[in-house]
Image (cartoon, rainbow, N blue to C red; front, side, top):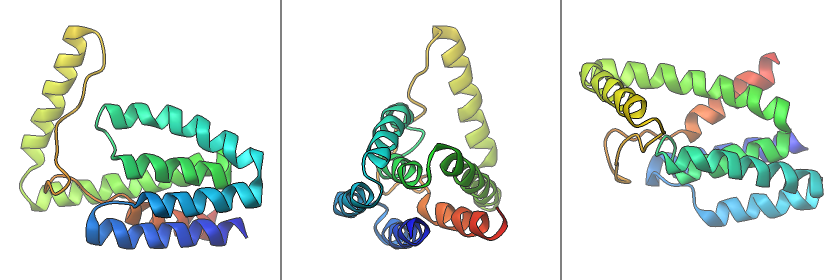
Length: 159
């Protein structure tokens, strides 16, 4: 039953992420309540701990707020081991998709230079900083939910 809940979460999140570039808090709340109802305190503990850990990635602007909530819901439902395995598969898909996008939009060199400059800034000041400032409609932002859905489908088929 948990896999059906996660599948529906990722399907609805994919649709909203593609069309509106956001994952609504109402959607997160609905699945949060269903997670507590189905899995009780185990879900709540995993969700809260992963939300705290992944919020650091949001503060550094590596991921959007919706992506962090999606990570946390997935780990809350699937557990730490299975949730991270599925997320790694999804991030591999996202990395491949981003590479293809950067190659075909002729941004690969520019983005690589941004990464090098970021690494130099981090090494120079000795602490992590924000990676970059982007708006919600920025063309450099890519929706992550479709990659999570693809990773979930592949994970369910082969793992």
